[in-house]
Image 1: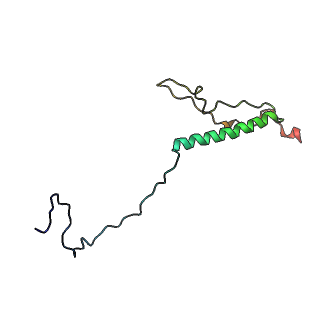
Image 2: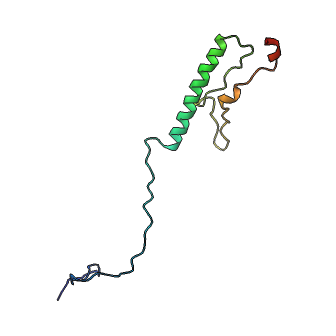
Image 3: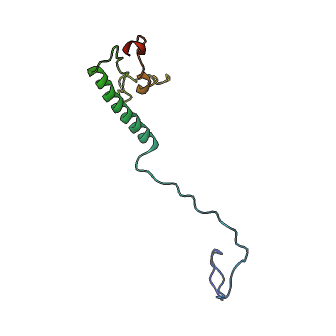
Length: 112
């Protein structure tokens, strides 16, 4: 007896056996990088950073010589404002950057 093969998984005992000569080509391994934060966490951090910057700009406008400064909409992280019942859709989030606009009574010719 040359070998013990109980499940048919062992290779041949002959040391000179080279196997099949027609090996198939393989593509390079596709590596997906792992990030510390999930996509959802990264999205929320971008919203938070933009809200902080917009709030800072809003405070500068309140201290400056701006007329008719609109109040900021609710923060994305104000969870009480975004409460909803099961079966309903979550209230839409209004991006703060959309609030940066000139008032309707702005006349650039007046200031020149």
